[in-house]
Length: 121
Image (cartoon, rainbow, N blue to C red):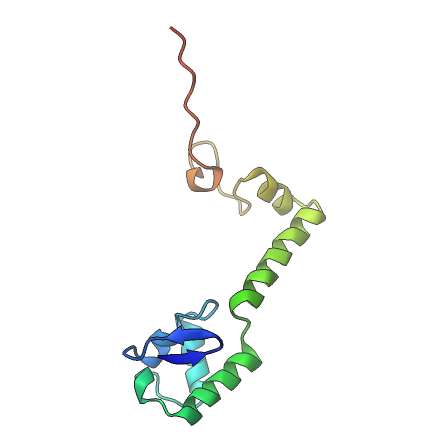
């Protein structure tokens, strides 16, 4: 297994698919990284040389925000919305969708499961 940016990448995968196992790198970003480091996207991870891995690591460190740093940035962004008490921040606090979806009948995944009503006999 190759180790890139603190993540283990399976050897048997194609390079661009293997890079997507890193949190914060999707298919498009993975292909851009391989293009910048002049590596074919169809190459297998086990076929990459040490110099290729070093190139990939350099491109990722320079251009991408990944792993714990990305999670921390996203959490700070949400906390900023809550702190300035904007509409989106208030919706986050209440556990409701904040991008304009209707909530009367839908939004169950964001609102959580319904509480059962207490039956009276």
